[in-house]
Length: 87
View 1 (cartoon, helix red, strand yellow):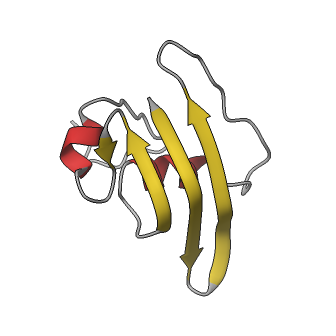
View 2 (tube, rainbow, N blue to C red; view 1 turned 45 degrees about the vertical axis):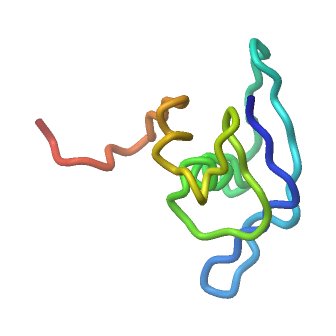
């Protein structure tokens, strides 16, 4: 259902993710845990195609960079800080 293969994210010359690979099968529950700055949110931002990255990220059968809208329709993301204007 979710697959990352050798995903590398560099922002401002700083390596954020370095060749990260993981897979989550349909029906499987996974928690990303780690200290602040360990890359948890960066992985989600790659899956949502919110940042440019190298490697492959897929949700369902959709490539996150080539088909971001189709991939996003299979996900839900609630950021810690609101990204949209207050209602």
